[in-house]
Amino acid sequence: MTDRLLEWISYRENGRTNDLPSDLVAGGGPYRIIEDLAVLGHVELEADNRWRVAPPVLAALGEESEQSATAVLCGARTRGLVSRLAKACADQGAEMQSIAQGERPHCLLVTAATTSDLCAIATAAALNWQRDAAFTLLASLPTIATWPRTPCQMVAGKVEEVRRFSKSNLRWTASSIEEARNAVRGLFHIKRDWNSIVLMKDGKDAQSEIDSAAGRLAVAAGARKLQLDLKSRSLRIPAALRPPTLISRSLALCSGMLPEFGREKRDLAFRGISHRIAHLAVSITGLRLA
Image (cartoon, rainbow, N blue to C red; front, side):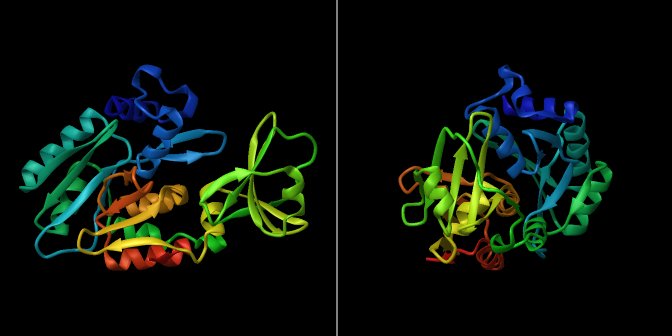
């Protein structure tokens, strides 16, 4: 059903996450679906749980190769667009492959003889073109150590729940507003009666609001938590340290697919990872290879 949802989103162009039609929402709920669509490059996330569809683009997977070149279709997707792309592929002698992703949109991969052929296909189908998409995006992002954060006052008044992220256990643990106020370092999730915020303590009287995923990685900085297997071209990371959306998108653009969740080890496996992408990911996330 999520292919139909992506088409609905493509025509709607923008909206709120809780406005998604219930009959088109698959497993995981609307917030997880929108987050996954953002990782796949179909939508951009905005403030106040809003989203907007991204322009359609053929995003090249990996470096150029003399044998073949492959790209994934990201952004808006309508039946007319897919028809144009299929015709352009046929005219250019390229292959278009549709790969199922469970309850998420199919991954549409285009494989041609050369990068020039892919560019010609994008032009014929009236699509944007992005060369070496994963590396280009990842190289443009700030490191987790310099990830955007907003200095703020400490939370005052009544709160409903306070949790602290544990570096040793990689999970949120029960805490208190008093511990948050007195802590010199640490990441706290504070739930009030009207909203929730994530605070990074940088000193006893210094704190900033930060993206939760970036904050968890900042707390875990230096830990040997990344596992790289060059034979299978996979990079594994604990699910509790799932990177911010744009970092996850960069890694997903190595294969065009969402990461696979390993229930036994509770980790995420990104596929199609090259040696240079892995080492760039190390420098961006602040984690180290195990």
